[in-house]
Amino acid sequence: MAKLYIVPTPIGNLDDMTIRGIKVLESVDLILCEDTRRTKKLLNHFKIESKLRSHHQFNEHKEVQHMAEKIKSGENIALVSDAGTPGISDPGFLITRTCIENDIEIECLPGATALIPALLISGISFEKFIFEGFLPVKKGRKTRLDNLSEESRTMVFYESPHKLIRTLNNFSDVFGAERRISVSRELTKIYEETLRGTVLELINHFQEKSPKGEFVIVVDGKGKIK
Image (cartoon, rainbow, N blue to C red):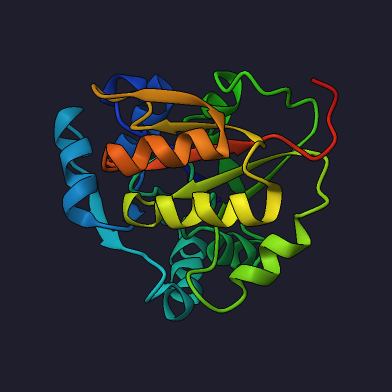
């Protein structure tokens, strides 16, 4: 029986694509992706000629049942995101749930995601951690942060460059200016950089040096033994 393959793709460096991931993308009948232009560059790099179809947050609700029917009819389908593992702050949950509801087998390949490297190089202990992804832009943002004000586990957030300073200021208000954090940007890429310090120190840094790239922020939990 055909199945859905969840295939992680590199978060920056194309050499991080796994051999197994390449073989799966070569063999499937269709690849679902967020941006066909971006995924086409990946496929061209590895000389993969499989068909592409857009599958993103704006069309996934109306697409998932149709995709499940295609798999049940015998087509193997792979799901990728623009970077990293599908479903981690990217589309993926809905089609996975639909396949489960339709008794379709799902095979998830291990691979790239930005949060694990950021944790490992943060210098902040993470025996226990929570992943919060992107904070709400407007509605629910304050509530989400207030709910985390007493969190003792290490917290991991994703953020875009134009919202970074706002988010760091929010952290200062909720967690305190002296809370330890680590900010990584452009992981695996040419300009990869990780900065460590207090919330206030990182605010001052990015006020002087404009944020560029995609960011992963690791925040120490409250009351942890240093």
